[in-house]
Image (cartoon, rainbow, N blue to C red; front, side, top):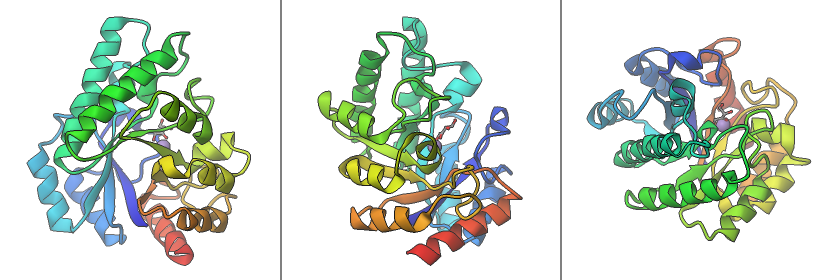
Length: 265
Ligand code: LER
Ligand code: MN
């Protein structure tokens, strides 16, 4: 398994679960100094920085790009791919597709989290399926998967648990769409983290590695041993990405994450 940490450049996400928020050259340097293999980027949009500039930073600091988030489409523009308005749905899809192209050029998958929509309506599930199909197909042209993230009940009324999302993917024969296991959301929604990971094993393509209180693993009450043992058992080789609150400060949160992962690998 590989390690990643979140870098955020979205001012509206000030209270969000992102660790390094300084300008990207400094943030990449901090991630490398803390010992991570990769960074997960949360950017305002696909035109915030050029692919070549990100490639240069990644090369300088010997970091991979683990994934790119799309949540700024919701935070900044109020977009979701299940919006009741067709025009807004199209804008949302185009935003996500542009992020898929941006990430794809960096060999990184994009994530659908908050842009799936929050308080949705009857047609939302079919719109979600259509959206995931388009996104999975576009991601395939870059040779990367598309990542769908179940969120806790306060952030979406679509899928809150891994198993339900996995069944939905199978039911709609969605190819090239994988599931993100965010341990913070799972702590709210799942009965047993390890069992949920095992049940959705073949679909899991990314992990947000957070403790129960969304701080670095070890600062809450999740049992990381059970989670890590199960991830090893299912043969998970993807990223453990620290999408966590920068508490008590970004560097301490980063170092605690690395310590926790190293002690369980
Ligand atoms: C995104 O990865 C996520 O987990 C959401 O809770 C962000 O709002
Ligand atoms: Mn997450």
